[in-house]
Length: 258
Image 1: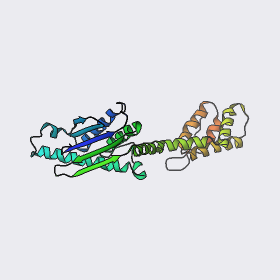
Image 2 (image 1 turned 180 degrees about the vertical axis):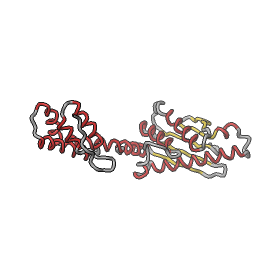
Image 3 (image 1 turned 90 degrees about the vertical axis):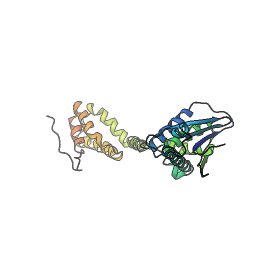
């Protein structure tokens, strides 16, 4: 029977899952609780057999159950209740498309988010159902549950949603894979042995610069110009420098190298 002021986390399964991965769940829970409560400690109070059922509570409550009226214990009880509400909130977000978009993002995590992400990961990997339940001394119940299918959906959405960096890299690859850009790059590689006119040189550079601008990679132009200069391709470098802009958006003046 569940006691008051404890959070019961349960994983339900038909076939016992491997142990690896569950450590991440408890590390995330401990870290989330510590950050959300400004230094309090979450402890494992008990583990039950059958499915994986773990009771968690504040260290102050586990160490001093006799001091039920003490201010420190009251503060600990409030912290556990608040943390349970955070977990329920993130369980709920894992069930909707809009809520799932907030899972597994980089950067600072909201209270309880890291824990639920770890729970979802191990549940999806092992085909588990997951449930969290809290009961207050007054009988208030906070409860949330995820089915194995919901856990899988949450992980799959996070895996297929590209990050901003991935989007940029994909855009760059698409731009550089255009036939006209590939042809221009091939001609540029062979330009050292070719007798191209200034118009032909500028035409090749214009195509490459357009691709870089499309990919948001204009920042590479100074490096490209310097690289061309190092290889004695001064006319090509000059053509590239015509496209380099100052921070204010104006074109930078030509740089003489001789």
